Amino acid sequence: MPIWVWIFIVLTGGLFGLKMTYVMFTALALPATRGAIYVSTTRTRLAAFIRAVPMKPEQTLVDLGCGDGRVLRLARRYYRVRAIGFEVNLLAYFKARLLSIGRSGIQIKRKNFWLENLAGADVVFCYLYPDVMHRLAAKLQTELRNGTLIVSCNFPLPGFQPIQVLRPEGALHSDPLYVYQV
Image 1 (cartoon, rainbow, N blue to C red):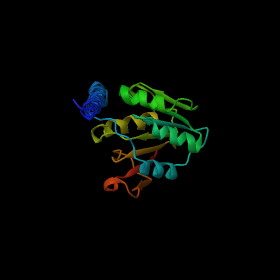
Image 2: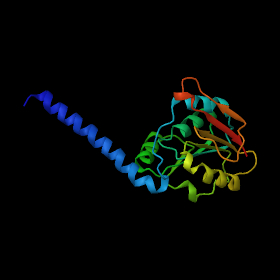
Image 3: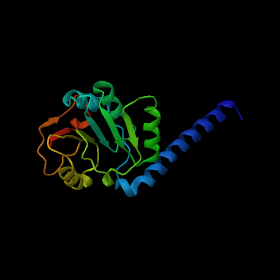
């Protein structure tokens, strides 16, 4: 058999293996995520978030379902905030930990944020599915103190009135970022 056939088989098998690993870790996280999957936040959205929500170094940013931790790393780089992320998908968790090695001030927790008290947050970032937004709104309303900022990608928080709705240029379908203040 020619070498190019072996190369093709190995590459195809490797890609298939990676995809199956992603599917397996997503499936394992489904009971906690209720169907939400790990999807990275785009650079366009991140830039809009960083511009619209200035933070101070003594503040704490919490990312609910932090994925690969890109929101945490960017906020830490620009504002030197204390950045805490919660992630239950094992693959995303390991990727976030790996990409955050050597970066102080970033803490990635493999915990279900529903079981954690978020009272210490100054800014909360989330990119969750619409079916959990009612429950999330109730949790944030009870746990967060006045003045805390909340940024939600794509889906509004029921019962909250946005102080700003961003539609980043180049964002797919002009998907909004909702900014709220408790």
